[in-house]
Image 1 (tube, rainbow, N blue to C red):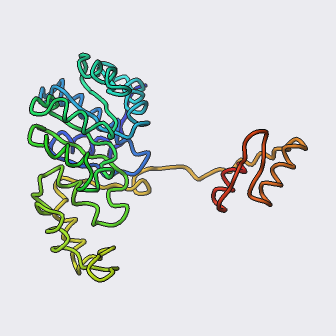
Image 2: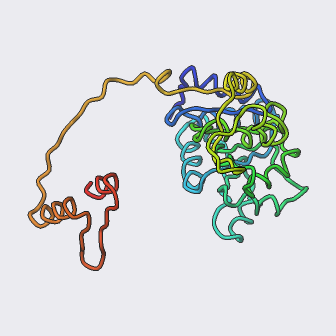
Image 3: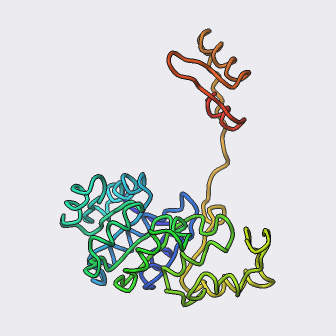
Length: 285
């Protein structure tokens, strides 16, 4: 398929090219992957700025999404992919396969860092779902922090950078800039921008922003992070509802009604159990 990027996708690609450390906070469906792959292609074969790229992603995404994007678009067809997945034997073989982009699931980041140690070979790292590195206590954060000095370019991708509030941002941004913008420690970040909220004596459960802190944080990140919402950029047609009635067989209808009423249904050797209204709706579907 011929790639005809929207203006915001071209902007996102150039954003990555122009910056050694960058983050794309783009909502789902806005083309984070293809924008990043296009940037990798240019950095590798036009600018000769990077030689070996690592993509860290959730397992399902690492297994399918990135390879599918490369296969989908004509301009990416020359990029060579190696998926560092499966058992250790398969992962090691994939690491030593000649490729441009190596893709690993985030659960194996610590294994990868330990495997290479000071011989870290990846000069560019892309973290797909940067928000999965929101805990500075997690081993994957500590491991990536260890090899951060060996990484020439780092890109973070996510649609939800702060799912529980801006308190989650510090570890993610630290991986990008080493504490340049939000401070060298999470404690310092909290003290500077937040006040204790819900607490039990000395134990603080939640934090609230100080007056003006939100704008200050955004300003400090504005040179490396770009945020876009789908509603502001995607031009979608009005939704069309096409309702197709389906008549269930008598037995299936009886089972459907029983599950809807009793929230539990025995089918052969298994039980279908719905613990809430939301679960029930999905089970009925």
